[in-house]
Length: 256
Image (tube, rainbow, N blue to C red):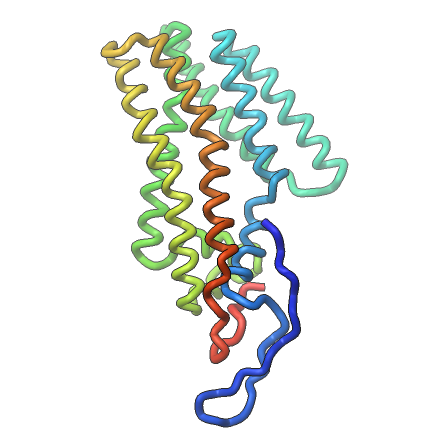
């Protein structure tokens, strides 16, 4: 997400005619303010790549070899390599840690299935369950934050700006963050609507377990980061419209 050029401050006249009110130097629209902060919160292209690569490697290796130890070893090695690069550069390791955490949860479910006597297909189906549950809970929680008018994107922006709740004082920012939050909900709803029926059919025997595993593997890859990137692209488009001027009476939203 590009950061717009910072222009000079402009004077705004109060309705009461008391003279000009000085606006701080900053962004020209609410969208520009939020775009700049959201880019930092998401980690940019590098952060998204670091979160996606280890998980993708684990999924492909596990589905192709049906060997939990092999898939876990290769994916963790890739994540550790990315982690070392971050440490050498003295930059944030947040997104690599997130990927390792996701792999660990899936591997734990697969391991529990193996301990219970499950075969390779049972283990693979168990690996997909945390992702389905996560997306369902994620979509429900974000939807709730929107309905109560405290959309989660606002907290993402506020956490980077240093004040988690300052954004809520500006109704324009609240409205924009609500629209952006709905775009985060959409990929989760699509994944659950496709993957949950496949998981239930595979575990119940209504559908061939091996075919269910293959379908889940394809859906996890196709509906993973590609779908997330599509949602983020929609967010970029929304933020690039720059239709909401900063309210001259309120001044620039207190985000930066």
